[in-house]
Image (cartoon, rainbow, N blue to C red; front, side, top):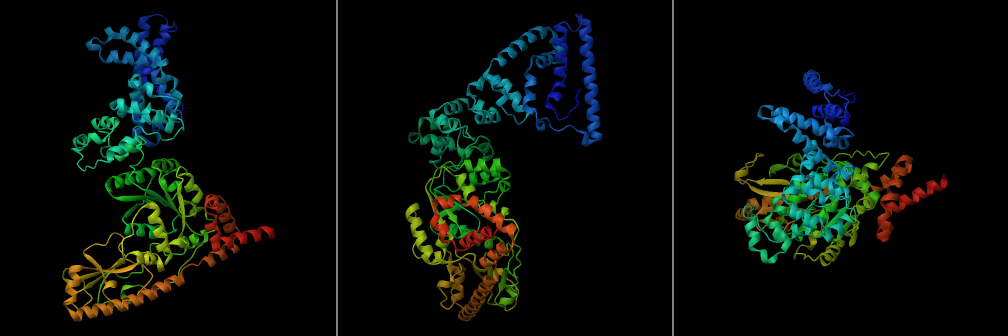
Length: 637
């Protein structure tokens, strides 16, 4: 009888197999009266009542869904209770049900031989390694458990007291059996035992990552013919890699979902890692690296740990024969689903590379986080004509509304995260700390030259001045791109895209320049220069058409000249309206709770920076003022 629906033990013992087996054992030990007819009557009675109760339970749950039992796997004793299905009591009852099912095929003639076999199987299981490790094995569902019990003799030599490995074997039982030789060779290798088992690594991979990455060195987009292509290049590969080819074990053939389940690290198609908090110059550096031919792969705030793994997996396989770096810009567990999903994702960056750790004065980070109109565009129109004046395209400037909090714990998710983030990448020893001041103005050129030498990339000619441009001036990031349509036959504010020449007002292109685009800043000498990363692009064919019409060309030049002057003034105005670091300090001075909250956070998160780049921390003007403020308040108290 089930008195507690949340008890998996009670619910499995309520299975008909268990109840029938219990009655058989009772009879066999003398507690059933010794009369075979009495036994048969009791067994029939148990079966009848069980079916009646099962039918009643189903009817009840249809009428009252709220009375339905929770899934068995949600019960706290789920893993423990599953082993009841291996007990002799349960096995005997299952034998009886099998014989009854085949009663018209002579099922009961096999009853005693099956009982004998069940007892033998129970004894063998109790003496097995699987049974000795039963308290350490975890299962997602009953099907995984049943599959293990059916096949445990084949894989029990792979199971050890290494709990994380046992868990991944159980989770991928069918795959393990299908590729037993390759997996067994890897799990019993010296390399696996030293790198994973000895270290009790929480995410041991079922396949050798070195071999999987060795196969990636041979390029092939055709999954159907991948095996034959790899075999043609067999002379380049190791013996183990050939075995993987024959078994079709390749990153390109394993879905990301399966790779995640098997703890496969991400493909090693990245050359370095960028760690940074939001607001530390990540957008600028990523764009500058793109100018130098390096892709930054970043999925900031884009789903759970698994979702991001899937995206990284796809992108790294897609960007073959290219130079890539990985960027991690947030660390809050909730942003990854939970702490386990976050840590698992971070563990799958197993290629140890140089690290660029971007940092910034925490007071400036607070200003950045709370002092912008996030997601608010200034544009009234994203597409316009020569007949639209500036005021018709761009909204009027509005006062900024600042709401600084009493507690800054929310910023530890993606801004104030240095020690927490560093602790997840502690195997990465070659770390270069880069303050945002190194990515401002002319100093950016020097910084990029340093990184080019360290990371072995080349800066294309005639691009260095682009490094001095700002992407965030005046919230410009929420305005661009815009498109100006020039129609020589239309003097009205009506868009006719098909007959118009398009001028794209956007950021400076961050990939090697598209050969079909030209920047009008290089063609129109009187355009207002700005330190923002603004460009005015036109297709070559459109520009050639514009040059043929001198009157229209002059009109466009005049319009762009006036537009860029007004845009530059507006950027300056937006900058003047933004929250200032001095205003953040004033808030901290007047708000005890906010000041103490930030002090507690920074005392923890700045540990790694004070140890490794004390000169940068010492250069932070506003942070030093904050520390002095805290010291003064402490002395007063």
